[in-house]
Amino acid sequence: MLLNTSTISKKALIFIFLLLVTACSKDDTLFKGTVHTVDADNNRILVIAQLKEEDLDKNYKEVLGTNTYSQAIWVNEVSPSKYKKGEEIEVFYTTSDDSFPAQVTANKIIKSKIE
Figure (tube, rainbow, N blue to C red):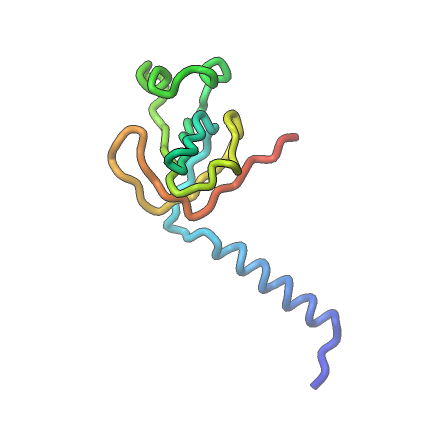
């Protein structure tokens, strides 16, 4: 049986769509925020939700110590060279610990597009 290129293309598109849909489990938690700190020594980044621009250049301990921000996570096991301070990202993860900031290992990280 011969398949025409139209049938192959449709099957390829369906496969890609299903792959994208299943890339993140429905059990994943989504965290949106700004990269505040890139910790190259420990292969992690600190992401803070609704971070104000004026707090980007402050030490993370000072920023978190103000109690201005209630949502912050250390994303472990990342390649620090892929991220820079001030980037808006979405982090998908399954579990976190109870510390503040929480410690997570991302299943997926998406950088927000700048328009």
